[in-house]
Length: 127
Image 1: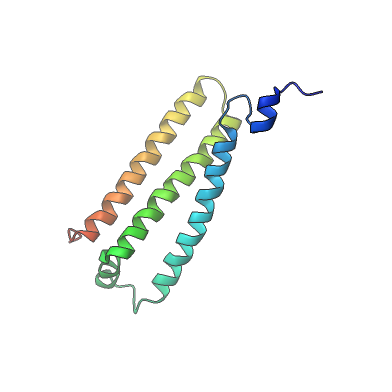
Image 2: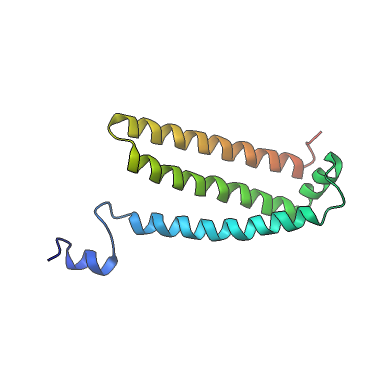
């Protein structure tokens, strides 16, 4: 005997009505991270050296800057989803809300800093 409604069984939604979407977001961002990380590692290994000038010139190329920006955004988003799940599972009471707000703030701040760093290099303000 199930306590779920027939519509809930068909749609696969839990009580919060968002679990499936969160799960899919984690999986899709994980696949994107695998592909972007492989690109990043291969691209770095193809460089002649790891001097500051070489890396900034590489990161300033439009395609590399766009992919670095995408890597930064997806990495922060995936991390935020994972930390949210851990906090929701293991932190209780008012501390849960405070921790979720603080975690979101930190992730948004890190994402903004990462994006600004990539954009600064891409538009020539890296000096």
